Image (cartoon, rainbow, N blue to C red):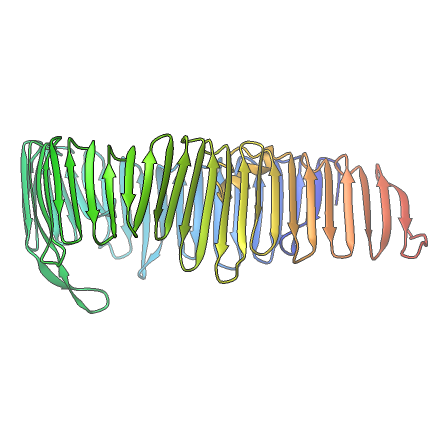
Length: 456
């Protein structure tokens, strides 16, 4: 279906389904066996995944978003305010957050309910990497709990008292502080007994002097001695490190990592040698760094930057010029040798080709090179500024091209071809049913296979 710039319907290239675009880039709807999606760009976008029972809704992304997976859902308002709910361990819950002011949660059983208005007072549970937090007129008083460790803060961060299993500590920052933890044992998730390391920590006139003994009770006890900026020393069976006039001169011998390193100062001038790590760096002029699984190079940073990561499953490479002006990313699946490739030249184009032979090119790519593979950006904004879109699926024998919101469009399917110009006012198609040409909706050519005239 084609009705000038008002309406254009065409098949999806990468899977069986249809897409409809209307009023240029302002509305689109597409549907397949796997998903259904519609949008009034750039204001409102909705997507429903049929296979995993999930939904996504964006309103002027990222101002407001909604995500649902099964019975779990979450509303977010400009990444600061959120409201969520669903089932968690068979307990229905609802959560509201106006970060960093209001934190609240309601559960059916009530055991995990909490409410807090910062900085006046309240309780927060299972948030901000703590099991529980209580405060009153913060920073006057606050209490945090993580596991069996409880910390009481008064006039945070000036004074605190900390207790736990085998642990005692205090600090009057920045004058002095001391904390000790006795080594112990615990049973892990596999039912095995393992050592829980202990420590002794002392500071005087923070950050000038530290004396830390870590990993006590293990085979790799670590001793830190710090007198800033004169001298910093670390000693352990696995690693020794010494700094003079920190951070200007540092020498490290890492026996566990199998390398030696000289920093003058770190991270600007670094040299390392060994099986586990090799580095030559003089920032911003030159750097080459290698480990067993990682590689990082740059020349005249940020003019040229290269990163590589290697594992038993894949090999990933990325090259960038001038931050994000140009980048090339390659992900190779080692078992099959197939690759995912992506090229970006900001703001001119983005192009990718995956291991299944599917390809896409977009000319004018404003945010995509800065936030690659961000599906929300593609759903909400890509159709607005893309002047040229091209897709090809080699395995399915399908391809499509679109210029300026379908002012010109071409679709290729097995045994059939379609193209249109002037937003569908000129249309031509050929396939098993013959050839057809229409100009301003007037049939000009309408032939059956073999040269006969088809009925209009």
